[in-house]
Length: 321
Image 1 (cartoon, one colour):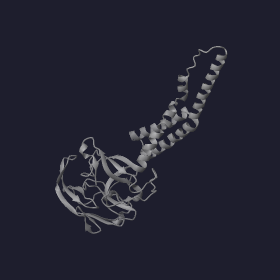
Image 2 (tube, rainbow, N blue to C red):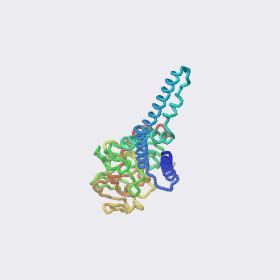
Image 3 (cartoon, rainbow, N blue to C red):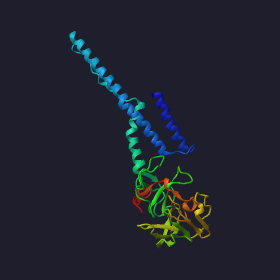
Image 4 (cartoon, rainbow, N blue to C red):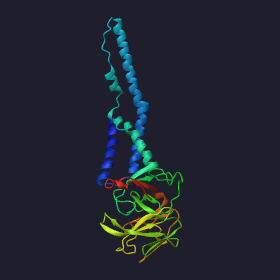
């Protein structure tokens, strides 16, 4: 068992190391699932086989010690060194290979359940969602809001709350599902969404906006046009860069592109069934559905709702819309 456990732990370390060094594309959900299964098997083996074996050895030691004390007593010897506490502790002690597997199972299974079905932490790596989310924000994502899904397979088990316009959603990037993206949902299945001359329209109606004072983006050291926009029930803020053109350069040949019409003014799309059109709040600095296409329902990870830490700015902590 020591040799087998060494091989298993070495395989996990090799996978994690290769992922960290960029030699392969890692999948943390799969890694966590495998760790839960492997340590769970060891935990069951420890509880129902290895621990009873060690307890049996302790019971045998205690019986042998008691018999020795009785035999010596019959010989008139009553001063006997029969302290077996140290030996008993050694017999009950978990070997290292169980300590690093079965011993970690309770922690790993809690992390697995929390991350897979309740809440998952993410770090914002870019400025595409400024001013709502800033670079370095550590956020929480509600994994059950849109329905509980199986880890790794992402198969939906419950329906949950339907996706709404204006939701800040984390999803698997359609061209590369191993990567998670975060954007705002602007259009639902069946909607016609138009972003022409930097004006957003849903089903032919302009989205209500309010002009705000210019916003200074400290990540680029520039001022941008700043607006309050109402897509859903709650307003959010957006940025626009007047130095950037309205047309969309370099859009991918994504599935369903025939539903879109690109012009020098921007793009108009009809959102297909089971898909969503997403955009970043930093409209001219966002790789979103204008470029990579529609987000399938199967790619949804969860709804982002809370900044739990930003080490560069503690005032960022709190809920957001």
